[in-house]
Image 1: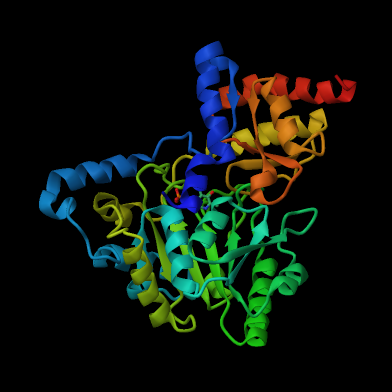
Image 2: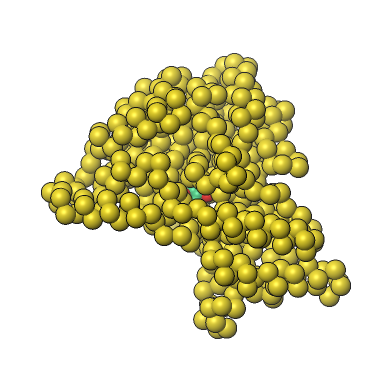
Length: 399
Ligand code: PLP
């Protein structure tokens, strides 16, 4: 006998992974250049040189026993101090090294924060704006909670504040916001951030306990056209920022990120201690040490994001010309496109016939769309355009 829940999770692979595996098989069958795989959010540009240079210097100059040893559970003190100083300087916002906890990426940050915030009895609620990253449901349920989706505002995928307020109940403990967004590419505006802060303050008062805001920010630096991403702790004190270096530095396999608790959050000391407890109970021990030590030299640095911007422009312009309906993404590396038939799964299957691998939106809690991850080579985008055009044509002709 094994856990039914875990068995189901293990057996029912995510749709994204499923498509990615299909792509691998298909490429072996018909050739690398003939499959247009837009399934996975795996950065396609290399890490910036500062990453390799820093790692090489660390390997050359640091005592291996330290470099590869355990760090303290919350992460190396000097690394946490460097992050806190960076946040204070960059966002003109309070940050305290003793309220920062280093993690194995944003996924660990999310699962640890949810485990820490949700009371032990189970049945508490976490609100997410749909469409949402599918793992929110997995992590929330694993922490004993229930995910409550609130559809994004129609038209621009912003936050529907009245809808959000209507979903708050006395069991609501947290709200997850992801900006820049996977899968829509939407970036929360400053006015929405301010309205969200106000709304959560009044909702917390109404239910009689703090509702924590989890700002899931692996795409913080991936924005185009000079768009700024509001630092949510400036708008709402009960905020935990869940950051990751996976996308900004193209290091998703290295598993490094952090949780930052606003120093003035309600019960901040308790929340931080519970985060340590959650990390411990989930067996994380400490975040990967070598990549912790890499952080101070790489704060604020990014991979070359130019390719993503070019891909976005090329795809958005071409797809809208072919008759697809999508909102122009301001950040991340995803385009969220309305399926050309009501059933996105059927549409994704149809796209496969044109060798286009597009993720149906059902698992994101928002049916009727597909997600295009454009963190791919510009050459692949170029090769894929005729297939997108032909797919739209198939539907127009009703063939
Ligand atoms: N949150 C969102 C919205 C994501 O898209 C991802 C990864 O794609 C993650 C969290 C997890 O990222 P990490 O690699 O930092 O665990």
